[in-house]
Image (cartoon, rainbow, N blue to C red):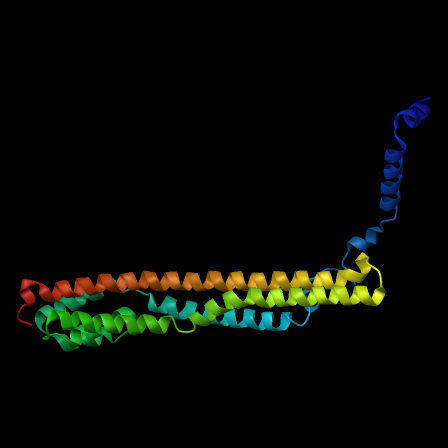
Length: 246
């Protein structure tokens, strides 16, 4: 009775859908969920991305190298000696400029180099001392920015390489359609896969390079503000009444 009732109220389309789902589920082999020869992997994805994945990979390696190199250099340059200015003030007050310069030369950070330049100009007018320190600070910051321009360029052109790979993938799709003289997923899947992988690869490399570039520049900007603060404190030391004899 129940069977007759269900057959009466359930539409044929629903029964057909249910039969399809049942057949699909029954046809699943539990062993196929394990990793096999055709299992998805990042390496296979990159290999099947087409020839444009080679320059994208080179750009990624170059961006990674520049980022690590600049991160190490900028981190070392940003080390701060909280007692440096106080020690310099004491030595300048005693008139021992050579010892103050020797203290600055103990470390080659931009702050030490800038302060050493200011110490070397003691005796000249204050504007000349400040100008010399400004120049030294800009030179040191310029050294920290070395190769960061390449990182910025990578962030801009990597997505373009991905777009070129996308065009190649579309060309491949139409070529395979022309060869097969039909349109189905088996014919176009390879080209679709290639263009999507290239697009994703180019965008990922571009975004990472862009983020790393602006991250490094923000660290340099922070250091530049600290150099300006140290310069003002140094000029205040020279202009104190007890230093007028210098």
